[in-house]
Structure formats: C-alpha cells, structure tokens
Length: 230
Ligand SMILES: [Zn+2]
Image 1 (tube, rainbow, N blue to C red):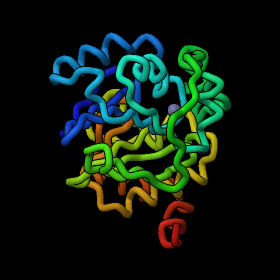
Image 2 (cartoon, rainbow, N blue to C red):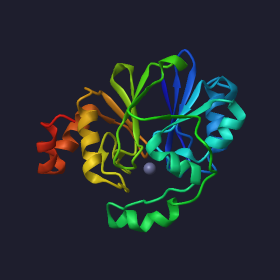
Image 3 (cartoon, helix red, strand yellow):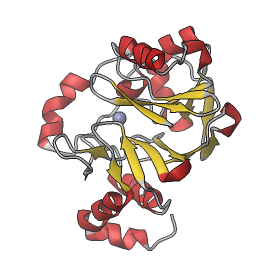
C-alpha cells in the first residue's frame, strides 16, 4: 500500500509492505508532518527499512538527515545527485516557464547536508528491504533523478513530471528541468512500463494513459524518441 504524505511544497510517500519504506523526506520544516503521518499509519521511525530519495533536491532531501538520526535507516540516492546532498544545496534549478522563474527564490532553500549511505547507478531493488519496488534511473530533472516502479502498475516518479495545481489526473511539465532531452527519454522509459498510476513529487497523481497523452501532445521530437531504444 502507498500513502501520500503532504509536505509544505512537495509529496513524500510511505510504502507499507512487509517493512515500511519512506520515499522522499519533504522540505526542511516538514519533519512534524512526516512523523505524524508515520504515527497515523502505525509506523515508528525505527521501523523504517530504508529511506529512498527520488533525487537530491531540498524538497525531497530536506528532512533526510534528521529522519536517519531518528530511524537508523539508510539513505539511498542515485550517485548523480550525491554532490547535491553532500552540499545541502539544489545546485542548478533551470526554470521551464516564467512562473517557475517567479517561484524559484521561494523554493530554492538550503537543507541539512549529509553523506548518503547507499549510492546506486542504473537501478536499485527495494525487495531486500521488504517492499516490492524497483528503482529506475530517470535523469533529466537532475542528473540523479530516479523513479520507483511498484507492483500493480504504480510508480513514484519524483519530479520527472508534476501533477496539475488545479485539475485531477493531469500530467504537467515540472517547473524545473536541467536537461529536457534526457528527461523526455526518461518519460518515454516510464511510458514503456505499462503504468496504471503515476505519483509525482508535486500535486496529485495521474493515470498511465495521461502519461501517454502528455508524451503524444508535448513535441514531435518526443514521438521520434519513442521509437528509439532508450
Ligand atoms: Zn526536484
């Protein structure tokens, strides 16, 4: 089972399998929200099997260091984002729209730096930690962005795309993307997973068919990419 935890500016997800797994840790200041969501689901911090970050931005890694102290759980992140979390800074945050340019100063805050316990490159399995999930590298938003493919066709996709601020079940380009071409390849890769539901780092979830609709309507280049091996 997947539980969405609403942070101040982003989502975290609690996976309730044989052992609980926390995917992302909110922005600095989200600690209370996360601890109360754990409690509401009968999970003590010490029960967490592992803390996985979809990427190294402060809205995902903001409470990671403190949650590790409280839980003893290892922090797993893709090696491409290791420097971000070691520095406790977002690094380059390339806006994709004029709205993104306006909100950047409000979301680009430093967070507590930490040394990750586990760095992975291509993929990572959550099965040894008691959760049915495979982590795929889906770079573009950041170099080390990753998505978690769960059973039953669900996926936690970090900031590969976001949900809509207003409408349910809509996929939108994220506010920030450091490498658009790489990100498009990652969306294509996700589309090939036959997903039923995508859970983004911002706003609400959307269906697998909405992911395909986003791909089909974004650019012609995307359609060409979709026929290439990724
Ligand atoms: Zn991000």
